[in-house]
Length: 356
Image (tube, rainbow, N blue to C red; front, top):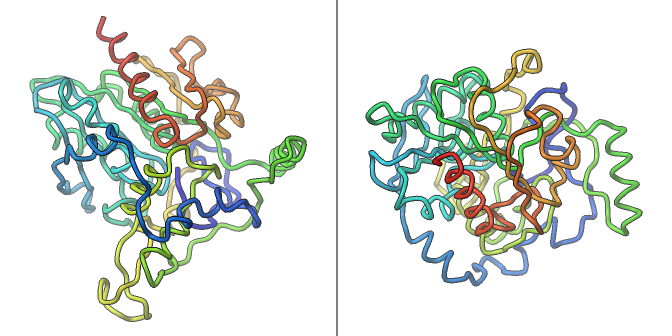
């Protein structure tokens, strides 16, 4: 998941992994990792430039009154993959991963409602998100000739994938979770423990409690100012700044600088995601509704992930004990940012294992 500002607060112990606000005084490499570039893009290696040059087809799919952003790669008729992003993120978090599968698969990535360029809703739910993923897969041709796709979800998107696997298993061949932990934000006791552990390591605390925020996003006068505010949740130093920059630029949209102005009139920039999504997300009873998964299931996660450390290592608090678990070394929660090529290799390994 990613966040542009301090968001979050207390919530029930459900499966949404609602983010917590950042602690003031974090090191600049965590709080504002792109600020030193002053609006310029960091240098990127050849593999990344080549990957993002494989442009997806972009369109919108209507789902229950909302337009859902859909990106697709590869030919219809090949085995299907659909990628689901994390909290406050968007489909382009996968635009440098998906091309690695485009020669062998039909690949789709969507922005669920309230995020990316997709419509905002008056009410959100896990069931609505499940319908959006399914409709996007249908529109992408992932179900051609009766085939079933593999669902792949990161963080909050992994929760959506898992929910679909429980409630709508007929929609998928299997599912892969990428650094997905189940539960709400840290409890006061967990925050206190994490602060003690951080202090013992000589590191600043990265979490604090606080009330949820649901007001409008701040509008920044320049793209440089907006990029300087981009940061990750849970807080971390990005493993590759050129990926953070790519993601950040596609997390922003034009907005008026003055109240009452028409959208796009002035040079302002603001975040795409709905800041009121969490207050409008129906999540009551999710703990009781989720159950076992009778499908191929795997979990790929970062060795240093704060999410996984909180939730029992590899999602052991909810996931079956006997599923494949692949730990990506030298990676925190945002595996595609920290170790993108290792993530590609891990995904290929799981898919090849299931194809035996």
